[in-house]
Image (cartoon, rainbow, N blue to C red; front, top):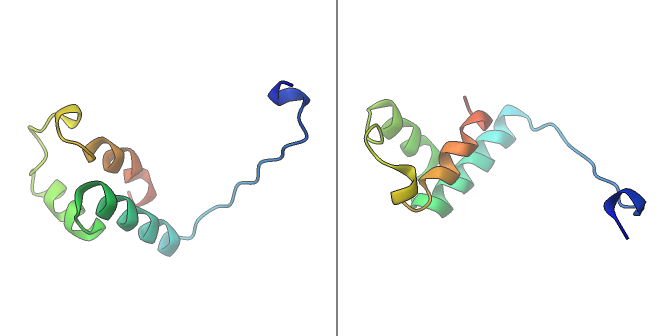
Length: 70
């Protein structure tokens, strides 16, 4: 059975800014053991400017989640 033939449904829910911040914080903590707030501060200070995301486990996950908060 293909996806087009299934009866599965997908629902999307828009996050409030508060929910998005909580989700971002959770991702940052799991991926880098940093709070979302600490990650954003480090990012703004340039801590990750010369870091290859592929060589730093978890960084790409957090960078991909940035649109949740910025």
